Image (cartoon, rainbow, N blue to C red; front, side, top):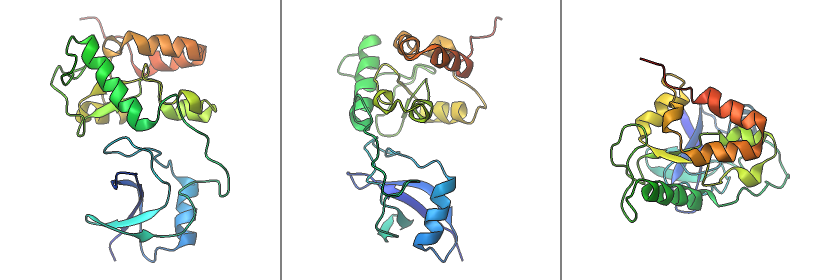
Length: 201
């Protein structure tokens, strides 16, 4: 039997994939997978917060929740509030800031790496200092600081996150480095490691 996609739905009704599972899909089997996986906390399409209920999806049809609990590793634990902005507001703030910095207020910014015009829905807002690192250190209130963000083409983001072609430091906005310095020495070291200086020709 084909695998079933498991994920969650945002307030706008978009489905975000988390992992797949082969039938039978039960609450117990989903819980076991959740323990092992990095579960997304924002919509992959619009950046809105996910409501946390695990869902199955076949094609574009969203099915009923697999269980009543949240799509979370810790049952019963209150999820820390992220900030300083909600994910969707962070994405919009990064978009607008980048457009202003590029002298394009009110217009679509261009990719910091390729120079191509961006699409708000289809392209990606990248955290130069990974939000999962902030989350791991309990810095949930800093996960969506708009200074720690840059809009790039989706393919550029994929190449970076797959570690095949990391984004060079020359493309990272100065505000992201300022943010990392405020967070601490570990943050600036990690930012510089993930975004190396360009090689001299």
